[in-house]
Length: 120
Image (cartoon, rainbow, N blue to C red; front, side, top):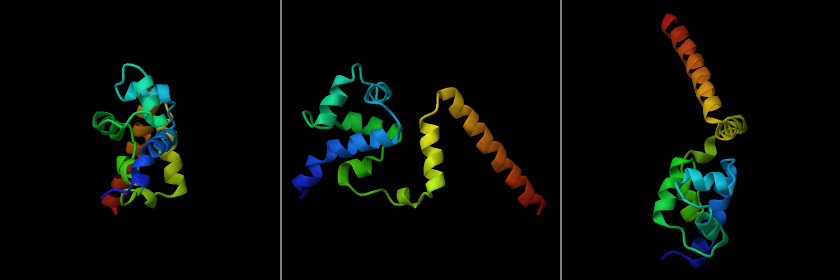
């Protein structure tokens, strides 16, 4: 049986994860496909239970839904270095155009390393 403490803190952990993604509630609400940010505000405040659809959509924007539900991190999520975490946070805070630039640079560096390994 799930303890009330775990359930009672789902809204707090969801808020923390949205903050970790670098999103305002309005931005997160839009990315979650909500018509209005009010439903997300109601969930975050604890006035409404977290709907399964919202939780599922939250995973698509980078929210660790396992952590939101259980209070425990997914295996490997805490294995990021400080630098890796900063890269992820910077990526999430970027515009869509800048995200594509970051992805292109990362791919170029990875390809460069692969070429060196092949020449070996």
